[in-house]
Length: 418
Image (tube, rainbow, N blue to C red; front, side, top):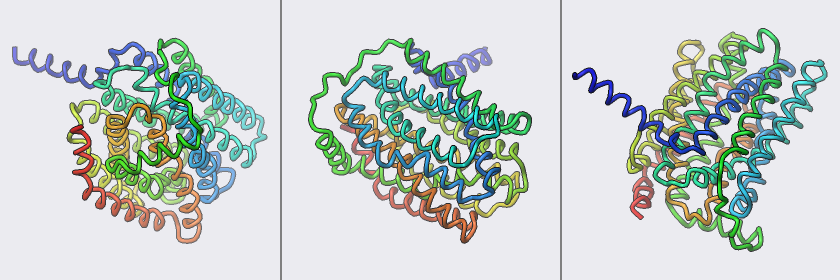
């Protein structure tokens, strides 16, 4: 009898962790995203390996990372204005179709042995422009899709679970495919998988919530959103923390091919395992968040996650052992996703609905927009002092930002009482 009760309790906990999937719209979108994201991570691992194979340069890895994300720094704030004005689903369909075409184009170039590094830069720039619009529209569309704030925290955590399941599995598949058939087929597979999320967006039934938004000038709305974000202390402190982590910490991912080949002496499959370890840690963090009830504990959780991320990155920069590096990437991934997903949840819970798109654009810009600048800077520095020393210094800055945030936790907690 006790065993039956334990089993029942276990399934109740599992059901609670996946409660947002009871929403039909979210379930359809979730399944479409799963297929698409798997392809995206297969392509991501192939992209890094392709660039390093063609150039043998950590600087070029930084340049490609910069090219793929720098549009977010300039365009995401404007995208946030439009996310509060126009039909979000229609824009999201477009932001899936364009990178699908880019993936097919890259597949053709690689499979015909015609690819050059400037092709990769061009495609990265186009995808970066698309991503600048996709991010604020996707985040602000989530509540519009599920129409239930009680499910918001779980839906965000499950989205993170989904993303990091793909991050865990996709790179390992990608590493294997690179070794067996080459990078071109990785891009081809990604192009095909985009159809799943496009179909899901066409199938779900959503009534736009922002079509009657008051129309003012774009600059007015942009300034209004920025003033709101930086005058409201809880949002300001959260954005400063993730922006600092985004600039100094997140660029470490573009240097993983250097760790795989030059520092650890491996190949594309090791790169897949390293990226997979990062994804496994992030997946664990996302599942942990999905099982949480309530948001009172999130501000302190963000602090500890930021500390874990910084310390994991610091130790990784000193490691030359494969097994240790895999373990450290696991903890780094855990800290990374708990920090970002918890911040996303808190901001979405306390933001004014009429400014949701603009504030989520600032949230996206705080890592998508500043990370490419960080990638370019750290790539240049690493060319002079080495990748390991560069990342060690970056981790110290991230640690300092986490300590400063700890002194502002009470401001963030107070916002949840309103």
